[in-house]
Image 1 (cartoon, rainbow, N blue to C red):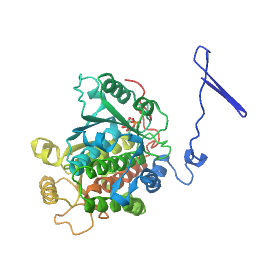
Image 2: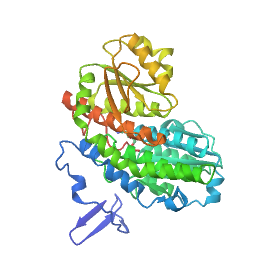
Image 3: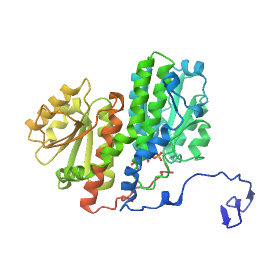
Image 4: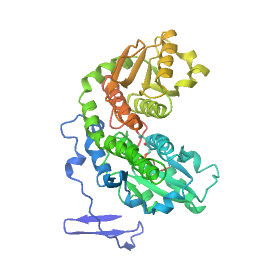
Length: 396
Ligand code: AGP
């Protein structure tokens, strides 16, 4: 309990026993808690992403050695070198951002990396390994399942770092070290800017882990430049909102939608589907594009559009084949991809600028946030407070 007066404060336990707390200053302005010119916090927080990403990156790029430096992880280079595996734990969007991070760590540091919902991990009597680095990802730092997973790792002697937005939150304190996102307050129940900042923080870690292994200086420099370009690129995507509002018309009248992608693009599809479900109550299901033919193709019809996430990567042609499979069943296709000619006909398309391929998932996700927002807007949903949901899930 806290009693705050203009000239001071007192804190106590619920029984009234006085407690001693040390004040710490958090650098937020009151505008951070105000919608300002925006109709919804979700929309404001989407627009804030360029600045938020800038803060996640701030002071963490080390061009001299073409690497990154994350002081808060408090691990020396030799300790980072001893890591043999990375396990990322979180819930909802935090877990999905972890999937993007795991992919980056595996690609850049060539370490086996895997993300798992914290809620599953904590209950399956997990094997904890001494040379695994565990990462707990949470915007609020208060999600009960993620906290319980951290405690389980610690109880069994594992090493866990927090990747958290809220400074001084329970998970941040329980981990004791890690990476703060510095995304600023996120008020909307749905996570947008902290999803992006989490993926960026994990990219920073992937580069640091990679550069003390086999990632070359040339690749390090290329990736640093790619990260530094992200804020402006995100800004450019958000500025094209009217195009995305038109795309939303493809989805607003339907009851079901698929989101598909491959590899890291699959994680983008998962996040796009989650966002759409949360704010518009439309039934959206994410599927790995390659798995479509093993069952879900049966549900493709003219009434069920599919959003296909198509980075211009090694799997580009395979994604084009997926489009053909869907259209052969008369399913409408909305493609989210990069600029350039699409070698397959689609019903609607949005292109994002080219970045370093490793950061494609970060950019390809931005239009999907705005897509969910505009579908919800057209359906008149309570965007900032979707039914049945809370910002932090502090219960089991
Ligand atoms: C995101 O849009 C959701 N509201 C939800 O999945 C959220 O990401 C999840 O509950 C985890 O929250 P946390 O990041 O605060 O731990």
